[in-house]
Image 1 (cartoon, one colour):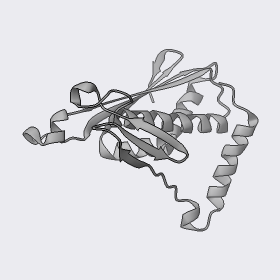
Image 2: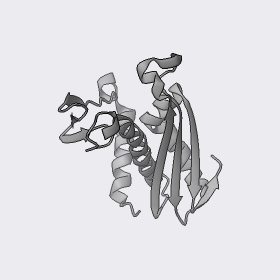
Image 3: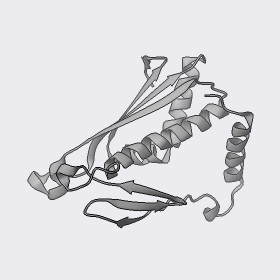
Image 4: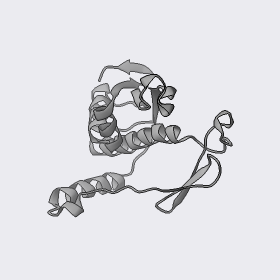
Length: 176
C-alpha cells in the first residue's frame, strides 16, 4: 500500500501534539456507541456519524441481517491493529503491498446462561498479521511489535486473556 508523505506528517503531528499536551482532557480518548434494539435480536448502533446494524443467526432468534456482536468485537481488534500498523509503518518508512489481519477467539457458549459454571468471556484470541513487502523482515517485526503495544484493543485484551500474536511476511511465519 502506498502511503503519502502527508500521512507520515499527520502521524508525526498527532504524536507531537500528544507529547506537548499539559491537560488530561488533551490526551484522553473517548469512544461511544449508542445502541437500540430494533427487532427481536436485530439492533442498530449510532457510532459517530455512522449507523451499524448488528444481528444474530436465525437458529438463535436473529434474522442474520448483519454481523453478530462478537464478530464486531473481533473486527474491532483487527481494525485497530491495521490502523496502528499503518501509522507505525509510516513512521519507520516501511513500504508494504498488502496488510491483512485475521482475529479468532474461543469462548464457551454455556457461560451465557450460567451452565456448568462456565464463564462467558473469551478464553483466548489469536491475532494473525499478514504483510507482503519488499522491505526487511526486521523492519516488519519492529512495526508489528509497536503495533501490538500501541493498539488500544490489543492492549485491553492482553490484560484479560491469553493472546497469541502471529506474523507472516510474504507468506512465511516470522517469530515476534
